[in-house]
Image (cartoon, rainbow, N blue to C red):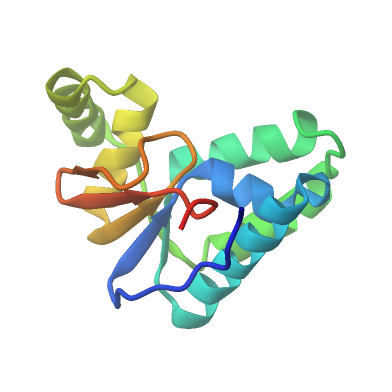
Length: 148
């Protein structure tokens, strides 16, 4: 079953939007607890890294696509806090690099954009539920925090 997450790395850690969504989705049960602990550990260690894509996906999903959505004002407050993390902006270079990753590793474009942001941000670990747990791509260790 699910276990608490503990980091061994001192490097930046990149979070996919699904992990942030679970951290604020009170209907997500054990995943909510695990994701909240992960977010708090990253906040306290100042190693959390996200991208503009993650913030955008988080806002849309947390305000409209989860069983108990939060209001836009509350989502804005959360995002204002998240903006203290290292935030990578997806620019034209990011898009071209994501296309390269997409072609080389056959990830969806959106997952490739997440991966390129993790690389760009100097992350060692990418926490996501959407990619294969344990895989190393472009030097990034992909981990599903609900399986660790």
